[in-house]
Length: 179
Image (cartoon, rainbow, N blue to C red):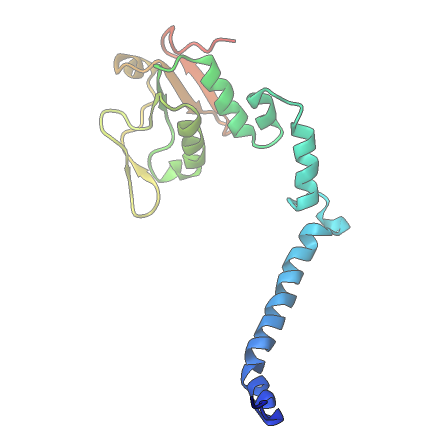
């Protein structure tokens, strides 16, 4: 049995040094990314990092009501859950102010509420389906007439007030939110 010559081990090491170096650099980079998550500085007191997420989990653990839990996280989610509880699942809802270029800023509200109010119909265009344009806004027929919405079978009207907040206007008894 022959043993390898000493110069063969050195030449093998010379061939693999780029891999060792890249592994070392990747390790340093990984530590740099993980360090602030595990040991955050005082400037990160209100940011989402692992210690703060642990604190939030401890705070939310005793709260069993989903609406109350959402109030501590995302207010619009709490609003959607509360509205979901307050109206029947077969209510038909219209949300005005979402179609057109000016409605682009309200799209997040529409997506959130569409998720939380499912399986209800949440429409943003009257008479024809809304179509998403290539510029990321919906094209359709907006409506600001409660009589026309009621005539078209809607039970609840969600509209944006002058302050930018959502206002609720029941159109039928079914659309009247229950406490």
